[in-house]
Image 1 (cartoon, rainbow, N blue to C red):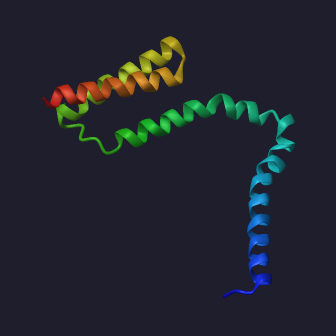
Image 2: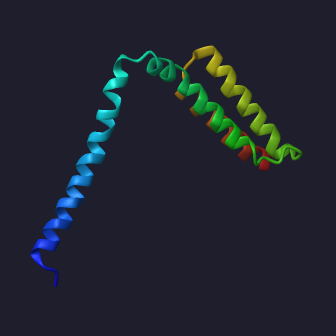
Length: 109
C-alpha cells in the first residue's frame, strides 16, 4: 500500500494541474477582449472551417466514377447555393449532407 502522504501529494498535483488547465483559457483571453483581431477571426472562422471540410471530404473521392462524383457535385452545389441564398451555415451543412446521403443511396440502388 502507498503512504498517505504520497496519495495526498498525487491528488494535490492532479488538482493543481486541473485548476491550471481550466483557468488558462480565461487568463489568455482576457487581454484579447480589446483586440481588433478577435472579431475579424470570428467573422471569418466559419468560412475557413467549411473550406477545410470541403477539401477533406472531396480529396479521396473517385471523381472518374459517376456514382461517386455526381452525388458529391450536386450536394456541393446545393450546399453552396443554399448558403449564398440564406447565409445560414448550419442549414447549408445539414441540407447538403442530407442531399448527398439521399443521392448516394439512390444512385447505388
